[in-house]
Image (cartoon, rainbow, N blue to C red; front, side):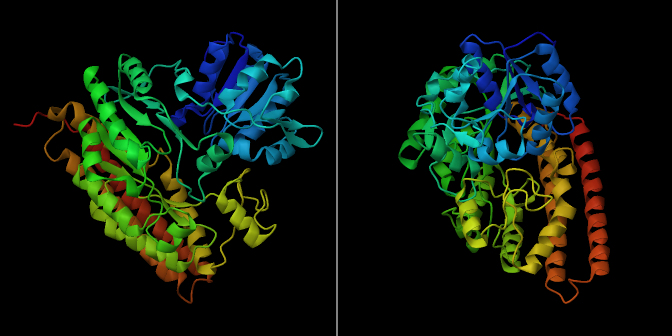
Length: 528
């Protein structure tokens, strides 16, 4: 925790998530002369520490930066705690989810004064200036009067180059001695996936659903961070590559400016399966691309159609194979469950993952589609279920999400088994998180210091993750068979099988954890 000097604005976010919204808002406020302070509030953190900080620093405005539903329930509880502790600051919330769910959030949290809808950079300074007067008239602000209402949105940030670089008050974090930092080269996405919260947000909040920074402005920020020791740049863009007619020119300009400034970097990006062009990605690899988060989501044709992906399973498979052939690590989430999942759709996804095993060196993770307000998926769910699935209708449903129960009882059983067996396994501190970290370390060494990698060390890491994935898929095969059997309603058998599957996964994880520890601690030696 920083010292307790007073500030005008306190911005609270899970800064460990390597995201930039709060840091950008802090920079915008500071540029206008406000004393803005960043505070970290993450998983397991004591809200009392934030309360004490707020009491000591006495801000007039506290902003809670939220993107997805991550920590939303804990943040709402913190809002209530701050007010109960006598903190008199104006309490507002910003981010994609609050902007689309402002009415529900204001209704469920009386201590929350407002929600900043639209792009908060466009009007946060106005709110900070007008707190003592007519703050209710700030464009894009949602508040109670006495029922929740919202002002018309302000204009969006048309030129991203006009934004100051994000505030980075802490030193860059490091991996294997190399600094790393998140950067943003663009905002929004020009595709129309039905489940995507950022896509829904930018189509409402911005005059254009996709905007890019100029390459020159982007390189200037990279250069500043490079001089601070950053070598790994994590591009947090929803879609790093612009539309097809512009992407070759942009990649060429990026390569040329990196060369001119003698910036030898490594970087990651996000894209879709249909973006993976061999020539383009070979160029990206040559200037430092080491890892790609691919928006695969599914290998099932029906699921891809319902999610509005506009790609085929074959396209996704080809993208994974192409990245592997280029030596670029691919990572992705498997969205096995959505409101219309069936035993057949889950089976198709597991089959796809089996076929993809030779080309994937990151651990498989298994997820449910989260249904966010404002998305096409939420509208479709509302139309098909009426009032079922409203926020809070299921006790376990996080605030801000529309809950749903699968009509296919076999798929619903698989969904509940997946929560028990795989949900906690995906946490950053699990063996899967350790495998990802080890991969990053080896990728950085391979990029900058290949002589420090022992012969066979990189392949050994790949073998460990493949074993993890094989065991996961083996358990899924047995789960699918059980869900399709006549015993699927036998509670005792469900308990017995679940315990056995959990034991197998735990044994596999423990072995992988030990192997990863030996791998990373193994003394490196130059190759002959």
